[in-house]
Every structure is written in C-alpha cells, then in structure tokens.
Picture (cartoon, rainbow, N blue to C red):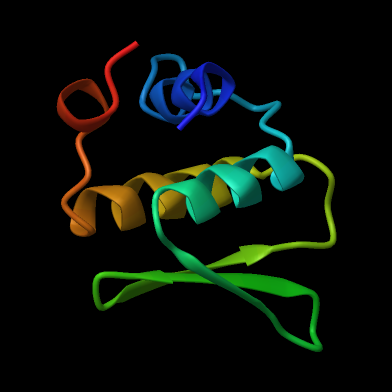
Length: 88
C-alpha cells in the first residue's frame, strides 16, 4: 500500500472525524487492502472482505459522516488495525 493510501486509512480513524474523504481514493484504498468492490444499479458501492461487507453511497464525491462510520466499523470487523498492519 502506498503512503497516500496509508494516510487515508489513518485519517479514517482520526479525531475529529474527517468530512472530506474522496470516494474514489477510498475505493482504491479498499482495493489495496484486498476488498472486492462492486457497484449496484442504485448508485451504491459495495465492498466485501473477510466475510464482511459495507455499502457506501457512490453518487457523492465525498463520503458522508455516516459512510465514514460504516467504513470504520467494516475495517475493524475485517480485523485490520491501521497502526499495526499499515504503519505510517
């Protein structure tokens, strides 16, 4: 994983919660951690990894705070710890 995606992964878990995460950057970061990405006809982005999945609204450029919360829970459920697995 390149440094830009590592910074994005760490930004997801920072305080205060980021509100300007680009959807495309998040999508490529999820692909790099091994998640399978699918798109639905209703404008959603579905990421699946390690038996878990998350649905994000793909129509907006930046992720909403709800999507960021869902993404944090998804990454945690997959057993990924940014500090341990992808240190800066």
